[in-house]
Length: 232
Image (cartoon, rainbow, N blue to C red):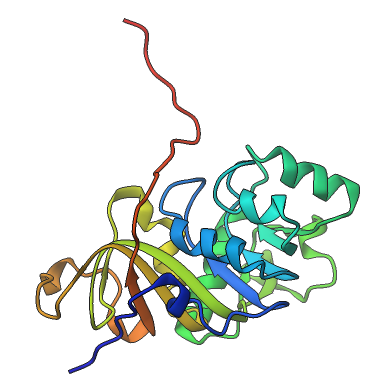
């Protein structure tokens, strides 16, 4: 029987070295691999290129890696709530490649599907298109975008089984789904790890073939990035 279960986060992140390119799932603080990020901070892995929709907040998520200057380059679509990210970008300490959000998602999905490149109209005529091949389709100009090439993809799921099959919950499906299987090695961090056969096949979002390692996280803080409430 296929068994991809890893017992600890330390074992799961084995092989991640300085200078590597990592994909990290999540949107804001929703569905981020909290245990894995904390372990990268503890390991003091540095000179990283991180592909993620954004970089968390100053004291949580990828913001923790930025605080320790462990990230050399961020490939993102949004700076948003992270003041340290903005400071490092404006000071030139951090290399930043801002990418339209849909293009970032598609570059992940193309890597997942084994497609080397694709054309998109997003970004044509802007800085995003500088140095890239362009081509006209049906009277509209498009930019050729290359699929990402990452060493590890680290995703977060609600439930998984020992064969690597994953189920995401709600909005946490976001970038996690397109990043699974989009790197040489995919590590899945899950809230609940079950035996093979325990998941309803009709509910599985990502099949185990996309995942090489799976482990159960110890705890999840699940912060809310911007909490907005209505007055009574």
